[in-house]
Length: 217
Image (cartoon, rainbow, N blue to C red; front, side, top):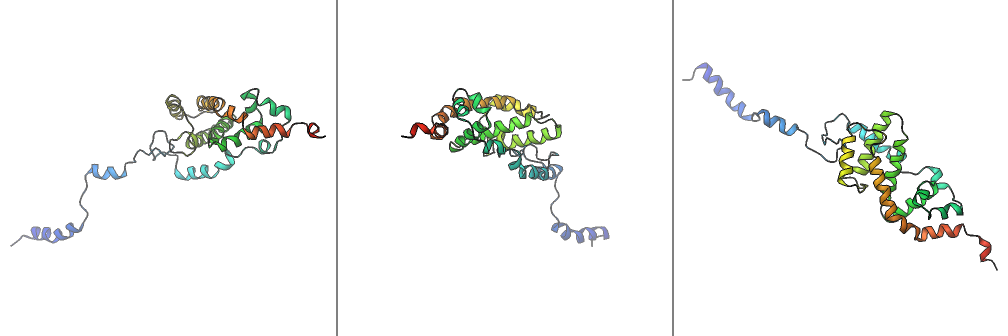
């Protein structure tokens, strides 16, 4: 005949069987441990960082007004014939002209490489920022939009430049992307710029500024 203590153990046995099995400290920690997620903007790849999802959604929602649209002066300005001809003299003249950047950006869109101009403009905006909090936010947004390997707008950067960015992002500054911006500037100068000068879009701009009297009889 079982003792009262043994009877108590026999009574609780079925209830214990219904309980979930005990887990070791290793088993408990494993499901909760954050996996390395490359889509996270935290360059440490840890999604448990203080930069939470709520702030990320807010930045994502404001992306259109912060970076993508060109200022109205670039969209609406009408370049003079001399200015348009000057774009063929040097890439610097094109990029220093708001109307030139707008026309070149439209051309890049036809080649599915508009992200290069967007990245360059975003870097220019970042370099003009003096408030450190705004610098932190914009730098993280640029990283997400143009440096992250999972972004559909990722720009082409070599491994050395990427490693440098990852280190600088520990303490972002207005010049975090300077090397990357120069690389993309060089890329646009070397590849699409010559094609732009030979494109129908550029020829149309030249003809728009041509004297009309030469076509009249």
